[in-house]
Every structure is written in structure tokens, then in C-alpha cells.
Image (cartoon, rainbow, N blue to C red; front, side, top):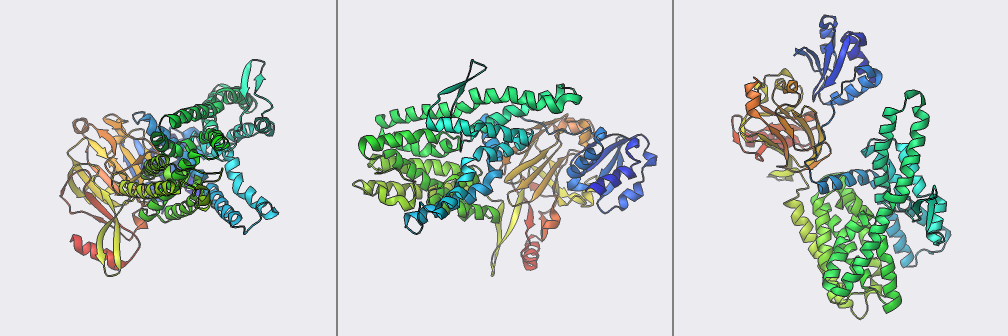
Length: 629
């Protein structure tokens, strides 16, 4: 990429011939002092350059889907050329969706150690429960360290992914995690010797054990991102390397320790008080709310506050109903992961779902929660509702535990007492209802797969990934599009639509990868890995966003039919622009075949438009072609 960037700049006449540089979805857009100096034939002869075009006073080098990487490499080498297109931030999305998407983006990168540690915890618990391993022996101690480290030091893992999400300094974020986990603070919180410190004599610093916490570090890194950028911008370059980190620490750390970090602690305390009142009021309601809300409480790091209530119940009554409710939630979360395993087709996610299921039934739900429930709304809702229903049934029938244990299928004997039948019925209801709800939602409202069965063969089901129409209108061949980058198939295979509606919707279930500032183009990646470019109009980048309203932003999870863009087609036509909606599979070469629907066909938004055939068999592709012929 480095050599490609250098060569392109050299052939457009060198850095001194470049007035400015931007990029769109497919091409680098140079503003040159003298276009005659550019060596067009040599550029077009380069294997990584699709074509060169001169339009609107711009010298355009079409490089396709890797344009973003090429642009970044050029700017890295020649920073003065930057006129970067910034992704538009859209605030129309609901606060809850933005919050969930942000948490998901932060938690998912930490999935590998969480899954590994969760599995190891479960197996360690099983080995010690069946007396196959001495729980006090050296091997068990080392295995405990191996399985606990990623959970205990979770703030460090989240500091890195939070810094990347909020686009700030990784090492400053890790420093904040270090402050939260500083040994003297942890020791003081564990021993209970100190209630508060006083910073500068008047700012109260609450002493809390933040190990395994989630929200404190995320909020703190979020604040860090704003403070650090502000100081970098306004402190002179000569001294910024010294004073920016110094002032950042002096500002952020006191706010973190006095305000942001304790938020989760105080919230947990109030949750615990509310739960105690709820149990006293109605076991049915308490069972549903406690078991149903546990995934959210764990996600927010507020579940620790319930442990004292569980311990107090055992001390006072000799049993705990709360432990039974938590058991129902644990089974529900593991079952939701199992349902996703049976539905999902992505091989990597199947592995995650399966391992999460195993560790979940063994009592470790973090892999299922962070790897599956946060990613798939069907699983989160299924686990919450199923766990709540099972918790309510178990609570009404008196389900209880006689000791403090990890909620696991291996700890069942603790729950098998005089109310065993009520507990077991609640467990069965929790598992069955979770499985049914998750499966139903995964296949209907929250479709987790883009793959749809196209045909059956003697060898079994042959599948193609269906790309749906993003708008209503008339489909016509890509070869008729008045832009050689598309008409020659240089960007990939696809179709164009003469749209009859102003709203553009998602043609796949997946994620929005890019929304350009000019809003005329959106890139998506389906859950099966199909990369789809939706490009509205020809040369509409020149409008600089006029006539376009983005309804999504980069990183958004979308399903088929999710609104992406609003287009003023009348304005485009009045200004002389072709308003066609172009849909291209930019990674067409990764598939056996990309088959378009019949041309000149009238379609509605959501109708099947393109079949993308994975690398399975040549006969399958031939059968599909024959079927469509």
C-alpha cells in the first residue's frame, strides 16, 4: 500500500502539483495545479488502478474498494494534502440504540480472553466439584489465576477497546484503568478500612473495588477523549507532549474517581434496595424482574450489589430465593446462545456461540453475554424474557438454594431441597421459553442470517446470499449506467434501479461500514461478509450533501428494510443529475457467482434483487443460472 500511494502521487505530478485531495467511495479526487503534467497512461497501466477520469475540475483516480486505505496511506506520507471526508454523525438514532451499539463495539473486541477464561472457569469448577482436582492445590491455584485474570482486570481490556471506539490515546486509557485498579485503592476497598479519600482537601474520592467493572472505565475513557483532544488542539506544539498528558490526568482522574466511577456503585446499591422491597412485595414480580434484568445488570456491572442480599438471606433464613432466580437467568443466557448456535451460519460466530453455551451451563455467562447477547438482540430479549418467566415460576413455587454457590448445572444439588419440584419446573420453563423466544425472534424480527435457501439439490440444500432491493423502481443493467467505473463492472457486479421513492433502505442484515459526508453513497457489510455499495446518482458527490439526508451512521447494525438515506430525487433531476440507485457487490471476486434478477423488472423495496453464490460447487451456480434464465 505504501508503494502504491507513492506511485500514484508521483504519476499525478508529484506532491507539488497537488492542490488538494479528497476521496469518495471508489476514487481518489485530486485537484491539480496542472493536469497536463499527470501521466494518465502510466496510471491506467497500474494493476491497482481501475481507470482515470477528468470531471468537474478534478483528476479522479479510480482504485475501487481499497480507496480508503490508499487515501490514508497518502495522507500519512503527505499530511498537507488532507481535505478528508468525515463521516457524518447522525443523532436521529435513539439514545438506547446508540448506547447499545457503543457498548457492543467496546465489548466485542475483548471477546477472545473472555471466552477462554469463561470456558476455563467452567471446567475448573467441574473438576473441583467432582473431586477430580484438589481445589487448594497448586494446579488449581494456577488455573484459577489463568481463568480469573481477564475478568478481574476487565477495566484494562475495556480501556483499549474504549479508546479505539472514542478515538483517543490507548495508553492514556490504560493509565485510567491502572488508577481504578491501583493496589492501595483495591486493598482499602476490600478491607473496608477507609471510606473516602479527600483530594485537595475537599473532593471526596469514594473507595470502591472496581475489579471486573465495566461502566466506570467506559465513561472515563469517553471523558478522556474530549479532554485529550481539546488540550492537543489548543496547547502549543512545542510543549503539548508534556502538558497535554499532564493536564489530562489532573482533570480526568479526579472526575473519574469522584463522579464517573462511583456511578455504577451507587446505582448498584439502589438496585439492591429496590430488589429487597420487590421481594417483600411480590415473589412473582420479583422473580420476573430479577431474573429478567440480570443480563442487563451484569452488563452494567451492577449485579455485585445483589450478592450481600443473597448472603443475608442465607444468614437469616438458611436459604436464598435470589440465588434461584439468578440460576434461571444463567440457564436462559446459555440457552439463548444455544439457539443462536443452531440458527447462525457464520462459522466463527457458531464457534463462539457453542463455547458460550457450554460455559454458560457451567455457570460462566460472560462469554454468552458479551459475545452473543450483546451482538444479537434476539438472544438478549430471549434470555431476558425466558429467564424472567422461569424466575417468576420458580419464585412462586418456592425455588431456593441452601448455600452460596455458582449457578450451574453442576451445583443443582444445592437447589434440590423441599421445594425441588418448583425449582426444577422453573428451570425447565426458563430453558424452553428462552429457546422458543430466541429462535422465533432470530428467524423473524431480528433475522440473524442473510443466507436464504434458493434451491434444493440431491446433495442437500444449496444456499445463496440474497441482496434485497434498497428502493422501489425499475431494475436495469449495470452496463447501462453512465459511468465507466460501474458500467464496465470495475467496481464489481450488481444492478441499477430507476427509483420511484425517495427513501433508500438496507438490502441486507449487517453493519454500516461507511457513510460519506456527501451522503450520496453508503457501504455495508452483510452478516455473511458480502460487501454492498449503494451509490445514489452519477457525480452527485459534487452536490456536497445537498438533497441527501443520512438516516444511519457508521457502525450501525441494520436489517433488511432499515432506512439508510433520504433522497430529494426532484432536486437531483432539476440540477441535471442522473438519480439512479446503483447497487454493487464490491467483493464479487470472493464468490462463485453474482446473479442479478431479470432486467427491466419492477421491484419493491425489500424484493430479491441479487443472488450471491458462495464457493460451494460449480453445478450449483449452473443450476441457479438455469433457474433464472
